[in-house]
Length: 140
Image 1 (tube, one colour):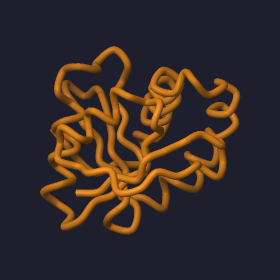
Image 2 (tube, helix red, strand yellow):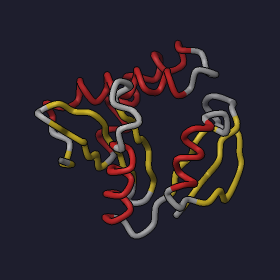
Image 3 (cartoon, helix red, strand yellow):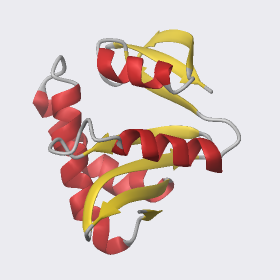
Image 4 (cartoon, helix red, strand yellow):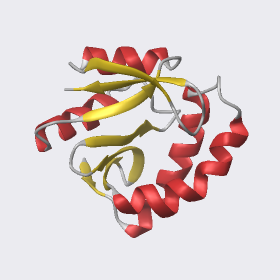
């Protein structure tokens, strides 16, 4: 089931974010993500419309949309990856919003392929201001 984030969900969502983002971005020092934790929790999640994927009262993934068009986060619990949860979340967002775009690190090849397979197109390559790594801007 996909539903809107509730206050009681934030700690589990942040656990998923931290563990999944470190795994997906192993080319960036773990400290960068640990130092970003509070900004994600206190700034980005509250400014987003966040939907969680829940099964048997267990949160297994989430997607956050900023300004009704930017995918700020799409993460699945590392123990649940490959089960189609990310596809369900992205399809939910595609059906809910008219236009979507996102930034994904070029070196995060599995995520780039995931988005290409969902119909997203690379429209621009740039350097991420915060991390200094190359990223693609993609849209559907």
